[in-house]
Length: 292
Image (cartoon, helix red, strand yellow):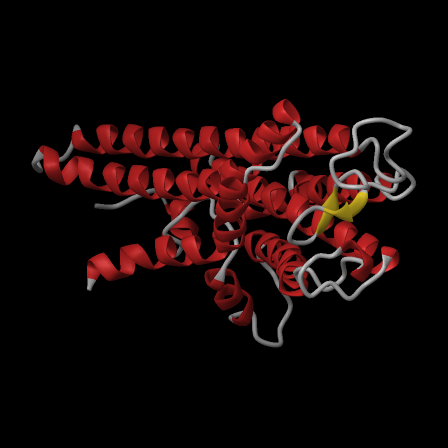
């Protein structure tokens, strides 16, 4: 089946809107020593940088937590904990927003029919400015409020001492819950918009197939195969995003409502949150596996 030329840049990547992971690294390495000419490649580079920051934070785990707070393997101090919390927020806020920028890029290409030059001049500056500006503003604004403290298995937005609820009881981070709600609102808004973008891409694929089917006597299975492939990939990538963030959000809501931490939710969050790249690697490789 032939598709419009503007789709050719999308067909080399199985997923219009994807998250970070090993595919990002492979794309980045394909640049070689030359300049990064395509908008898509520059967006993936930005996403890679955000995920590298987030991955570095996870590798550190409990080490930067002040050793006086009794966390397992804690060997840091207030400054190291603040630094980890700052980088944690910076990377994990920028990554989903760069995913949204990538999704917007493919919507412009597939749905709107924009060419590379138009995207580069009219849209790309905003695609970089939005994730960089929002993540930087949120993470920097948290510094004077002292919100970066021991959050369990690493340093992030949390009041100190753990479990304190009032200005008199909390010596640091009394506004941490406000920042967490802002963080969650931005993240889930991005995930929702990514889902809408993927759906619009699927609808466009379906419309093109229907137009071509008027001049094509092929069977319905042949006409609908591409739409089903795009729909499955879209569903898998949206599912990976939701699976990555759902336990973090539920854990936060549970903590706000009960004032307690659920050990089960903490374990699920610790397992699934760092696996975003792994899930997307499997999804990225899935079409190649099916073709083999």
